[in-house]
Length: 210
Image (cartoon, rainbow, N blue to C red; front, top):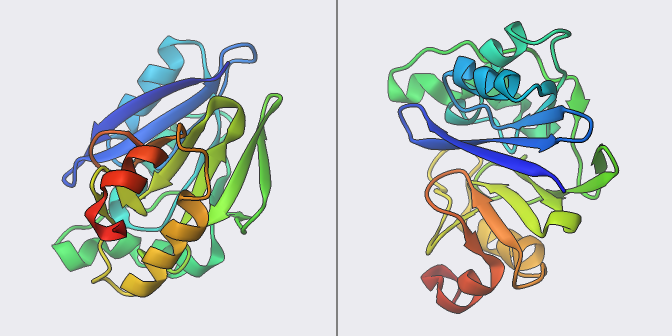
């Protein structure tokens, strides 16, 4: 069984996650939002080694802690991102839109694509491309744990914003219907902001999907 740690960090109160296999002490940093030293300390205090950084998308509030995570890890973990969001990484995740400057961390070297299979120990993780919030937004679905790290695609009772470059409401709604609502109803949705929810709850109560 995998372990999940959640951190709410940074100026946008972004949820960052550690997904760990306690049998091998390997961990993946998903969206290291901010204050990477906090994420590192949590991993090291449990004897976990961060082997990868996975980004759901390239916005600054989801990668602002990546530099610190990489600098404090040996060897530095590779970064995975969908190619359509490299523009965001090259522009500090759009931090300048909000009057901020960040170190975007190591350059992504692993291209994510829809249907790609990733692994943590013996657990398979499926990459699901879900554009609309950004063009290259992906989600990470872990069937064995009935959990999906969905970034800013969908929230409890809401959906991701579409007013930044690459955002599009029709595309986002189509992504949710194709990539979220096709998952089992008891799948936990771990979002980029706010509390977790489930596919079934959002199917029934999310006002954007009615």
